[in-house]
Length: 212
Image 1 (spheres, rainbow, N blue to C red):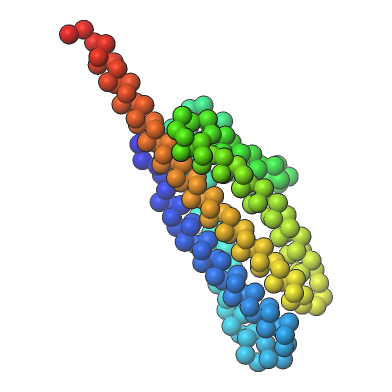
Image 2 (image 1 turned 90 degrees about the horizontal axis):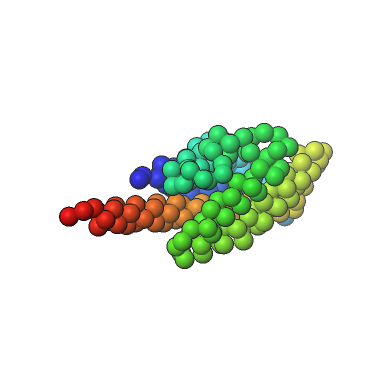
């Protein structure tokens, strides 16, 4: 059984890595502004505008990849086990519906973790526990990032130091999510292998029971 999410997960991984690089460069631009605003305006501002435009484009593509990836991940889990509690469309609803998505993101990754923890393989259980332990490190910084961005955008003057902190949180979030993407992808591959082995054992058992 082919896991449809693995390919798109690789692209998501690459775009998240590029996002880390761009956030780091934008943090350096904010630092330049904090140190010497005049020098920033003369030499850095144009570069910052270019990086910002590229970051916006990258963010849009990354969100699109994420939605496709999360849909395919849940389709893969459903193929592995019909008892998996979340459908692909249900997963998107937990992310996109306002207010509901405040808890929806948490429950999506919690259900993935519990699914892996419940598998027979020791490797899968280990991956499940790792994923579950990472959820708070991904979930709560999202709220911190939103608060920082609101303060920055509503301010009449540029808050360079706060921008640096916000970019730092963004880098941390991308690093955490890269780790989660890797764990989930490995879990799907291992769960597929486990199911294939179980089916093979069932076929062998059935063949042994057939009358000679």
